[in-house]
Length: 312
Image (cartoon, rainbow, N blue to C red; front, side):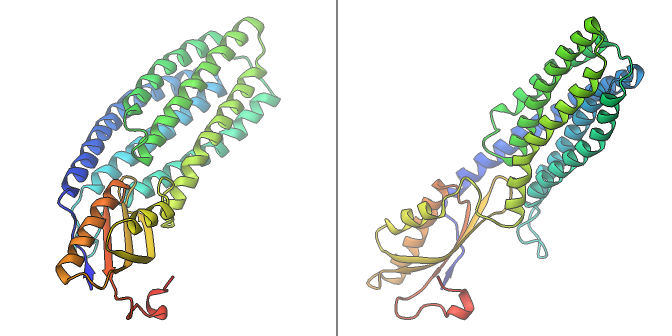
């Protein structure tokens, strides 16, 4: 017997998720506008003054703009209603966007590293004062943009990725300011290339967790904030549950998780009591960050065949 229904309280959980997504969507739009304007200014000044530090930082910020745009598109796609062909809708596009963001940043690191090493080995004069001023503007832009994502950074992978990238950008800009001041007064032009390589190292470190996290979700691994054993123990504590097995947990999107499981209830329960039990379990699962669950009821005497359900 299968039960695919959802607890009525799910509507409240879903509304909360949608509200968070709407707020994050607004933050993405504002962040895109602010950072796009800054990228144009920083790249222009980097080309004029032949500063690899500014160009590397501009490349990083351009990667972040692309990431913000991809994430915004993914949020919009996640709201598209399911169809006969895409029964879950396009929710998983948010996970693919996070993975794409990480790959874009890693490619940027590779491309800019080559030019940065050239500048380090064969330095040429750069305007340190211009570096410091432009990077100073970047601190304001990036900190301001990161603040937009602060409230929802722990609720959604793309939002957390945007927050971490923007905070890293702000710190990188601070480093460029310091390097610019030193270059201006000490004429250590090699510091431009060194600062650029430092920026790229920060990008690499900040991108790694986003890459591994999004790759895990792409491969339908159990989300990092979900503990399978905890869920199993919580279900077993509910009166009327004899055992639960063949449990699978995966992310439908960066904000919603799903679960399927086989449940053996107490044999003494009536049909209606078993349905009520499933209803109660679904409600408990929602409090454990499982938004969609499908539970199959079995009998202790007649369980699923091992070949069919990979019984555990």
